[in-house]
Every structure is written in C-alpha cells, then in structure tokens.
Image (cartoon, rainbow, N blue to C red; front, side, top):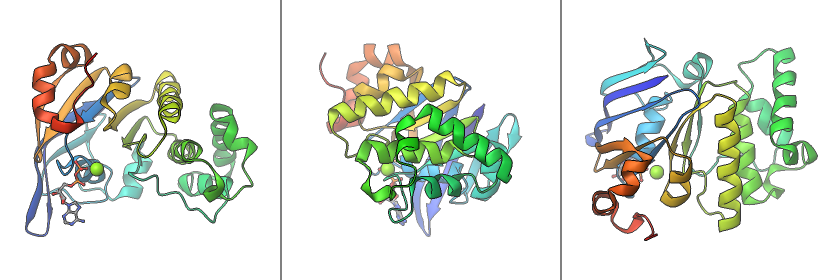
Length: 239
Ligand SMILES: Nc1ncnc2c1ncn2[C@@H]1O[C@H](COP(=O)(O)OP(=O)(O)O)[C@@H](O)[C@H]1O
Ligand SMILES: [Mg+2]
C-alpha cells in the first residue's frame, strides 16, 4: 500500500505542490483528476523519486520512501508509467522492456518478459520491431510492460490515454484492468474522467497544488456539481 500525506514539491522558488495527499492499495484503482497545471505530474514524479519533496510523507507498506531516488523506489516495488510514455523509439520492443527490468537478474528478467508477452500478446508479436513503429495504443502497452518488468506492487500512471483515439482508450483501460486483476495497485492521473471512473475505486481531485476532494467513484459520480466546479473544462460528461 502506498500512502502519501501532505506532499510539498518546489521547482526552485515555485511551490508547485503544497498539500497533496492520496493513497493506493493492492488490487485497487485510485484515479487522480484535476485541471492542467494542478500539480498531478509533479506529485507522481516526486512520489516515484524523480523530484525530492520539500515536505510530506511517502510510505510504501508502512516504510518511508520519501526522498529515495527513482531506482531505489523501483526496487521497493513501485514503478511509474510517465506522461507521454517516454518510449525509446529507435530501440526494439524487447530492448525497451529490458530497460524496465534492469534491476532484475537475467533469469528473472527473462521470466518476467515472458509474463509481459503473455499479458500483452501484441508486444510479443512485435518484439523485434522498432518501438517507434507501434501504434499509440501499442506504445502505451509497451510503457505498461516496461513498468511491469520490475514486478511492481504499485504502479503510478500519468495520463495513459493521452492522445489516443476513443477505441484505443478502451483498450488501454482494459489493459489497466488486467494489471489490477493481477493484484497490482494503480494510482492513475487521467483527463479522460469518464473512462477512468469506470475503473476507479477511489477518486482524488487535485486543484492548484493540493488535494481538495477525496471520495469513492460512486460519490464522485453523485457529486457532479463538486467535481464540475473543481475540474472546469475537464469535467465529466453529462450522462
Ligand atoms: N520543470 C518545471 N519547472 C518549473 N515549473 C514547472 C515544471 N514542471 C511543471 N511546472 C509547473 O508546476 C505546476 C504543476 O505542473 P504539473 O505537475 O505538470 O501539472 P499537471 O500534471 O497537473 O498538469 C505548473 O504550474 C507548471 O507550470
Ligand atoms: Mg500532467
């Protein structure tokens, strides 16, 4: 279980995050919603060890991981699927996966790669293709697969559906469901609130650098006026 309390993160003098709290548990999906510039990506990157938080606590299974560098966070069992996927286009699918498994021994890496191909057969079919030749949805699966290579208990995902066609968004959300069913806890930032709420157990809204609302997915749906007010243009569709 991941528990983040009262996170503060600065960029130099700029206080981008000042009071973000959220949690993610095994086999659970926590969806983080909020307008552009609210501090969602900054929070995820800080939790994953890419920025040092100025204040706050980050605990994984009851132990502090606050301020640990990213490669150590990965070893503790949490990996980040970054905004924009950050796939290495000239490398093959398999080479991209190996990068995600660099903390594993060769033997366990090969076994985990076989599991990733089992989970996402399209990656196995394309294993020797340059990653840049994959479709957007396939690239997102590769980003998931690369994160799975470190055998995480918790995965952080930053806008996995970004830039994808609606049918691909469904495929990506179905992939997320497969990982949840394996017991992995997911903390997912999404602009596509409707698709994300289908999977969400808990919803967290981050506005201007702080958590301003937390509730169940059912409460988020029922409380549309609150969600609308906080999200503005990214608000839920009327349905
Ligand atoms: N590398 C950076 N240097 C300085 N300011 C940044 C940097 N990255 C993001 N910011 C600022 O931090 C705030 C939060 O950004 P971000 O975490 O990307 O928001 P979100 O993911 O919610 O859209 C914004 O005001 C943004 O302009
Ligand atoms: Mg972002």
